[in-house]
Length: 172
Image (tube, rainbow, N blue to C red; front, side, top):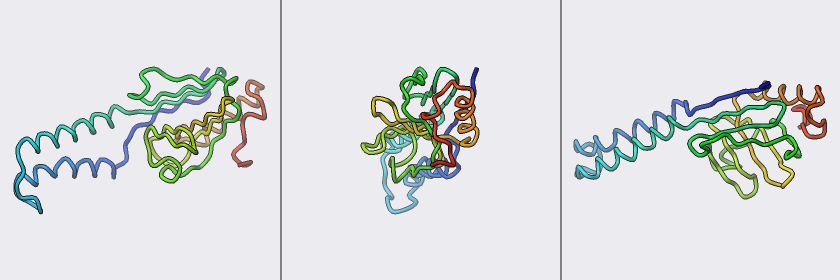
């Protein structure tokens, strides 16, 4: 039985505004607006192709998270074609925390940081920090921090997950 399920997409208005402006820039240059008054048709087509690729990639990208009795499952499509499962036996600690996306990971998306581990995040600054027995660190972003934390604490109260494994939010 799923205790927590979340699906996120890149829906930030400012991101789509930037992409929209970048998509219109080649047309402005083609019409002679701005500093660069001459641009080739090939350059416009190339720039529009890159913009279209970025739009399709961001629209397709989504992060799914599931917490249940067997462990934590996550999938950041299109980077993970199949969901990734972390069993409770592989986890040393798991807790919801506030983090700095830019400061710790250099932004949002599929991010790798040598000090902070790997992050899968779409928006915001709250996430599930997972410390594996192997020493690896994974952070999964969430827009539902309270519900996620409640699901973890529910698993502890039912004895499914070891009490030492999950840190309550007020203890952080």
